[in-house]
Amino acid sequence: MNALAESEIEQTPTKQQVKKWRRYLANERAEAAVYRELAKKRDGEEREILLAIADAESRHERYWQDKLGEHVGMPQSPDLNTRFMAFLASKFGSVFTLALMQSAEQRSPYLDDEDASDQIAADEAMHAEVVRALAQKGREKMSGNFRAAVFGANDGLVSNLALVIGVMGSGVSSNYILLTGISGLLAGALSMAAGEYVSVKSQNELLDASTPDPGTRQMVNKLDVNENELALVYRARGMSQEEAERRAADHFAALEQGTRIDELEHESFKGAGGAWTAAISSFCFFAVGAFIPIIPFIFGAGPAVGAVVALVLVSIALLITGSITGILSGKPPLTRALRQLAIGLGAAGITYVLGAFFGQIVG
Image 1 (cartoon, rainbow, N blue to C red):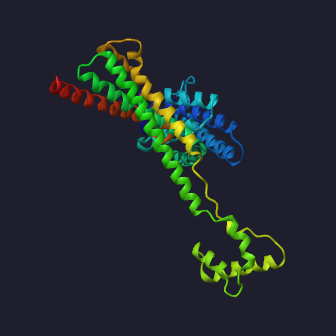
Image 2: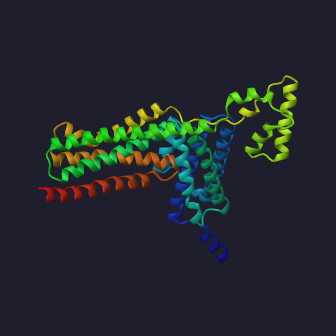
């Protein structure tokens, strides 16, 4: 009897364990709901994969229910992060939710918790990889313009804030600060636009140079079959001599039968888009970011007040862009937001010190 009583005491969970297990239970239940909500907005294989993960989360839910037993209590709310992901899944169901779920699965507490079974910990690790793959598909489908908007605006924020704060450090008036900020906006935006135009134009020209000439196909029927220059084309594309000669022979045989084969056009190269579109987009994105630091000076704020307001506005914007880049890269958004903020404010602090230093020399 004493041994039985001791065994029952050992199996009774502590208050800390009950609290932790209830939190796990609530999170697993909510995560299963998130995956089912995401599945509603997908079809085909992606939908089946998301539903399978939801079923696995439900198995984990039952595991913690069994662990709790009579201590299961009333249903609790999941943590704030899981509730936020549930909100995104219900309202948007976008790649952002999958990226956040990837980050959450990677930070699973089960790996270091002795109360969690090895199977559950392994499941969570596999879920992270599954969600990573699904999120990657979404990232690839995401328009490049969206990424350009985030990074272009961030460049404008940091560079023009540093310029405005640096000039302010030299002791000039608000009018000079505003003029400098507008000049920085225009110069930076035009530089970004010109650079993007040249980059995209050059890339498209490079791809055009690598694209097979469609007029060449019309000359194939005039080739000497015995010399077979067509085989050299295939060999230059990486085929072995035997495979190239066989492919060329098939092509000539098809020509004799009057069948059209577009072998020479089988390689297609996707251009980088319109150079003018890229240039205009870069100009606008950079200009939007660069405009924020000069807002207080447009409304006539003094150097000190304007600098404080500009720092607050830019800090908020940097936190937003940092969070977005973190989500897109599958990393914790808060960490990336704080890093972005530190970089922006650090650049502003350095230029302020340099501006004050050179202001003293010139003055």
